[in-house]
Image (cartoon, rainbow, N blue to C red; front, side, top):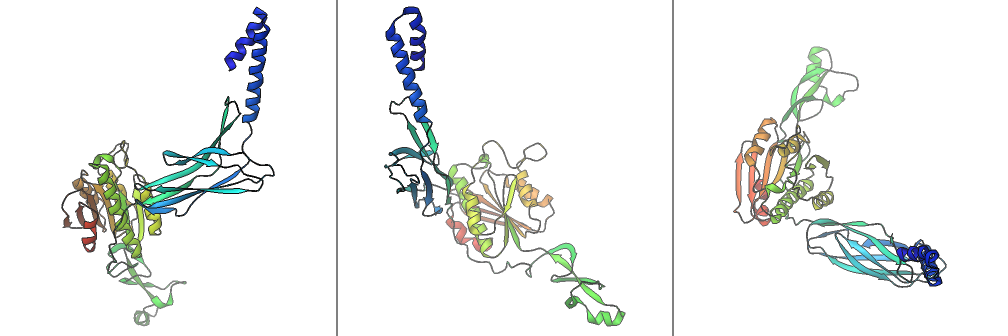
Length: 377
């Protein structure tokens, strides 16, 4: 239309045809009207809500789009698209009178583990002649977490903070379980730690010292290198293994740190852990964690084992193609007192448990095998 308008207006002085002038003026008027009509954004308040922000695989969730006309003039019907992950759902909002509202619902079934971004709701408005279109995002997006399948592993017999099975950590503290020696009393020391028998013999107040022990905590790392997995199903199994074990640690009251690639964070509860697991995707470009400007298979294990120095157990969920020998060498090179448990996903394989000094390899062919072997972990 712009080309037609320009051609007609430029050709009129050369030809003198008033028909060209009338055509160019008409098209120009239509373009000006369309531009003015498309600059106006619909005055409407829209909000997206979910009946459940967290669901399991194959569960259904109801998505509600609430629209309200806050003005004093009616708003014509609107047509738009609601983004649901990588797809879009067509949504139509009927005409709304002044101060009127409308609720539109859509049912969605979660096909697989993911963190799905729902929204925004995008409308398309324009002039009656369809010369121009305007797109407006009228609602802020929300996130739907589809949690991975997990199994209940029950509770451990031990696992409280500073439990009786804590190993010596090498430091000297004023309050713990493993007695180390005595030192002179200093202002501010707890009077309950004074050793009165030694104090009476030395004529000076003597305070007990203890050797610090490991706090019962756990660290969980999930390998995201796609070359370590035979299939997507195997990757999903590794995430479910890690999520199940991590949930058991949190139910036991352990402090849990979760790691993937170069990022680590604390998981205060099972919901936070499962939300984190929902966001994980395989990485086809990198292997493990970058270390000294090079990529090595054992670097992921080194980084995961290094985080949370107070952890007594470190879990690593890997695929069937991962180099377990390299992971074991990395765990030995750190000279850590913590136990390392490698959860290896191998779809269809028979369950296998290998217990070595400070190192356990647990291979599972399906998630239900983990429930039967949970006590050994």
